[in-house]
Image 1 (cartoon, helix red, strand yellow):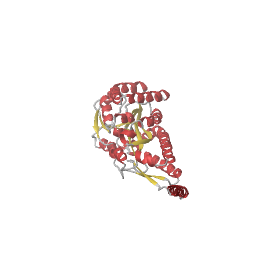
Image 2 (cartoon, helix red, strand yellow; image 1 turned 120 degrees about the vertical axis):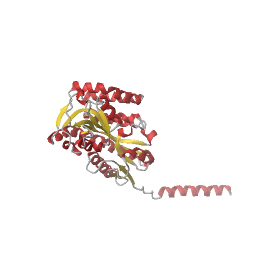
Image 3 (cartoon, rainbow, N blue to C red; image 1 turned 90 degrees about the horizontal axis):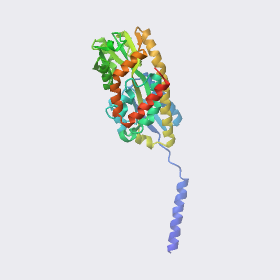
Length: 338
């Protein structure tokens, strides 16, 4: 009797395995990845994110879809990293340097005079992506898919600035703590306000100048209120796109691979765009009435030396990671001199 029962059990188990093997596989539910960004429609970073989403969606074949939500419609900029960490949104794009207070290594996005120019800055970004991902997944439950330059912060002013002596006594609009420290080191006085207020503070004569990327000088029509433009790639600035680790890990391996590939494509395409724009924007501003002054190498070196204690402190706060970051900067700068 025992042998009969054992035989029946084996038959039942084998039948279950066969039937299970023949059963129709469950269809995977399509996944929607919401990408929250602060940039409005038509803004270059927004456009590049939309292009990335379009490429990904076409390649994913319905398994997953990226939806881009512009202009802080889902998440405020300052809340972006925490929103991705908690899964309030699956993805977000934001200025990396905004979150330096959360981890000093994120200040790598805006160390003053770290790069000779936009080409060196752009070249550094692909090196920085794996470096950011050494700590972002464990500390912030997200990984960075893309990191790209949006060019450097320069000076738009109502008074001509050619030397450090010209900076003395100027009131300059500052958009970040690092910007404020840089302005002070150069002998001027910072006036903190959101970057979108550059036009207003000059128009109202609250400030003599603002320090923002040339892209924003064009967008915000600064030639209407500022007569002079001084460039020297003073403070670099870069933007990133991250994804929640739980959302990323839940995706099939082929979709994860697509995300990584399209993140890298976004990095490269956006870098190429901003390299061109960094050359074109000053021409546009000059055509609109501004007078351009490019810091000569010798004068820029003086500015860099004056600000170096600020940069050195930022890098020191990064620990050993900062040493690797410095090596990356030295490598790209050797390829792209000022």
